[in-house]
Amino acid sequence: MLPRPSGPLCSGVTDTAAWNEGRRLFDDGAFWDCHEALEPAWLAAEGTERRFLAGTILLAAALHKARAMGSPRGGRRNYAKALRHLALVPDRWAGVAVRELEARVHAALRDPSLRPTIPLTADLGHEAHELNDETATSSPPGAAGERHGRGASE
Image 1 (tube, rainbow, N blue to C red):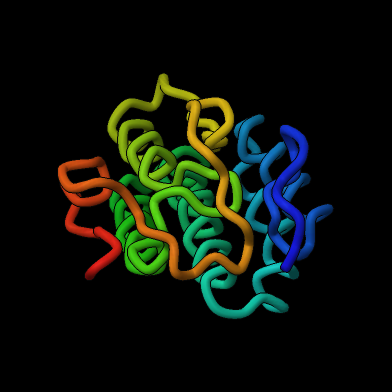
Image 2 (image 1 turned 180 degrees about the vertical axis):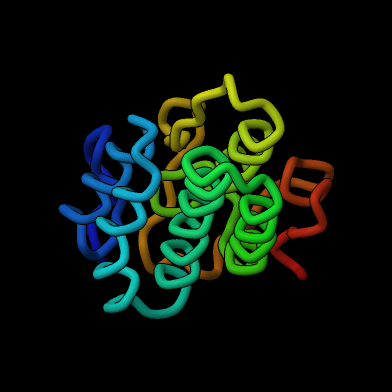
């Protein structure tokens, strides 16, 4: 088992350097660069980590498409693809509040003045899950993940 995330930039993703750089770029609004930074980690990943990275890359691509390329429709398509990957990831995984990340990107696609960041569970008062914790429950009934139809039992 890998150790729990220990710092604000360490999430438990196998390629920590790529994740830290990708997260920094996302938070800075450099969505295309975020996509590029995370792609090698995604290619090497498996299981939940691969789904998580694919979803995060697609969220970054959605924001890039909508903002830098002026294609809101393309942004929405990438957002929908991201949700298909992230639906299989627990609500809180690898130190990230996944459903909150989805919601922030959704809001930013609707309102270009918003600058979404990747929400860390420690920042939101949640306990982070370890990398290989694929059996973790997502949220209690009625929590954010279930309202969106992506609870742990689905």
